[in-house]
Image (cartoon, rainbow, N blue to C red; front, side, top):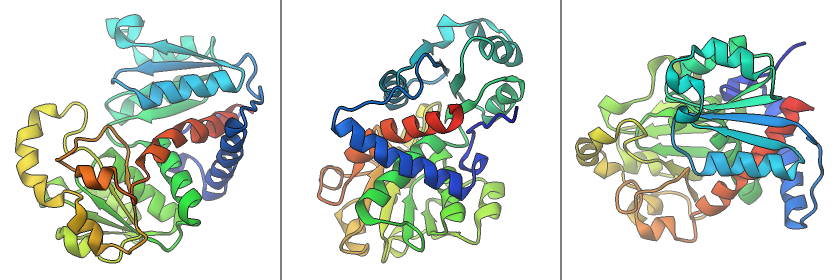
Length: 300
């Protein structure tokens, strides 16, 4: 049996990703009507968290419940991984007991190793290199609000991190132009950039980058595991803060997104986060619907 995993956006092709997004729109409409289909009745999702989470855990657990299935939460201290059991052993054992596994971890290589030993689909709930589940929600949110993202101008302001890498993948797959604006020492991974360079460029001046943008996105300046760099990063990233001046450079109908949690007054100002161009709350809520559609795709 050919098992499909979801480790990056590149795990699936554009047609498959669009099918997931379209299904997410249907599932969202059903949720608003409080009408739920038990399409995953008695199916079980195992969730392994090596990093803390709010949106990822709640959206996957809620999603499985609404689809008629069940989710099991495993923290590092609540599983043998925390006691040193090899990943390949955990993967082989868990995949005999559950129908799908979501792993939220640090090194992306862990996901690749884990999936190679798993007998069931493995989902990347976030790694240091990619965050594809968030991109599904972001794409769904933009399409809901503005239609197709193809040929749009998208600007990433901030660290060239896992979210930035996934946006670079999305730019290539969905054919939009992505401008990454960040300090020179925080540019995205060169290999990932090389694979997406037809659709991605780097502009260190944030005002030039934001000029004519359809969508502006940012993230915290110090991702999980890099909190000790917070003070140093704050000084280097302050010119890349998304504020009213930056937003005024974009198109009048430009949107603002942030995967959350946000540090108000750092990467984004309060007036932008809570302003009329911000769709961060819809974006956060869409994690539920896009991941339900993903689970159906992988398990049905």
